[in-house]
Amino acid sequence: MIRNLIASAALFTALPVCAHPVAVHVNSAEEMAKAANTFLASLNDEQRARTTFKPTDSHRENWFFIPDKFIKPAGKRLGLTIKEMTPQQRLLAHALLSTAMSNEGYGQATTIMTLEAILHELENKNPIRDPELYYVSIFGDPGPGKTWAWRFEGHHLSINISVVKGKMFSVTPSFFGTNPARITDGSFKGLEVLKVEQDLAFSLVKSLNAEQLKQAMIAAKAPADIITKQKPRVDRKTFLPVKGIAYGKLNAKQQGMLLTLLSHYAIKYRPEIVDEINSRKPIHGDKKLHFAWAGGHERNEGHYYRIQSKDFLFEYDNTQNGPNHVHAVWRDFDGDFGRDLLKEHHKNEH
Image 1 (cartoon, helix red, strand yellow):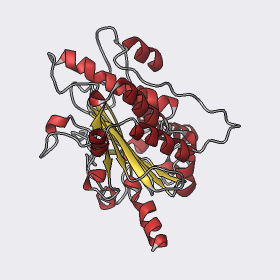
Image 2 (cartoon, helix red, strand yellow):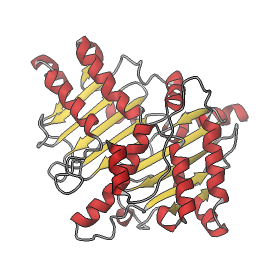
Image 3 (spheres, one colour):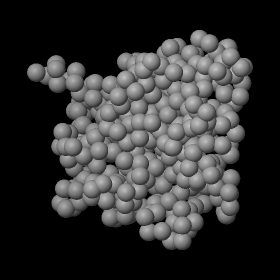
Image 4 (cartoon, one colour):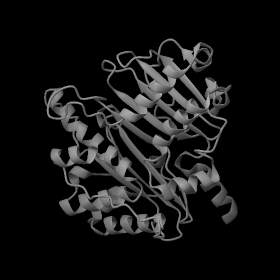
């Protein structure tokens, strides 16, 4: 459905994502490096200077999900925007994005970009709403076996990919937001990009009995936004002691619902990338999960939830504009921007 809506919108051109047969060995890191270098080769000197950064540049961890206008102090992001690219360069930028994303994730990401055009109309041609104000930044030197990183980011979307030694990945912070969360009028009426992330959570919280709900509820009113906001580093102490209902306190059906909900944050990325991360830090197999809820239990009430494991934090908040404005993020307590991998890499190198 999302693919068809994107095609009919035709707000900008993007490369399609092709599914890889299971029998074919796919080296995502090599494909990613090749796509990055092809994109860089298409740029002129001035564009390349604006796109490339040292891995240690402060820009690496300065990530944002708000519009440029509200970024302090400069009022804009760094990197090269889609708007400033030629048609050829735009296609190549999307080719790079597609090397990290699954079909579902790529569809969600591009649809979130198109929502800027809808906001532009809803807000009387507000100039800060622009589906071409998405930036590409590359950190380091892409190549097989190398350590480097890249970002694709704009309003309500921040994809942060780190590659270490050409074989290990980090994809956090991973932010997807939607405004409107559900379009109520016009040709896109009914479109809801993050529908599953909301509906599954409602189904889970409504399935809890009185005692389970007492454990899961952390506040009668939802916070105004995700608690981690746009911080470069998540303070684990903020989320200790762990709140919410423990995985073991759920029945088998509820446990399945929780794992399915969590998986929708991970399956935005290519399965081989998620599998590599999961081999080092359990995403799906960590049974020490906790599910916490704040706010109302109906769509028209502000609501917030989070899923917390030993290594990861998944947050969802829908309190603004009705509420009809979602912020959803996947964070890694120790490994955002590949921080833990880089620490080990530098330790071994030196």
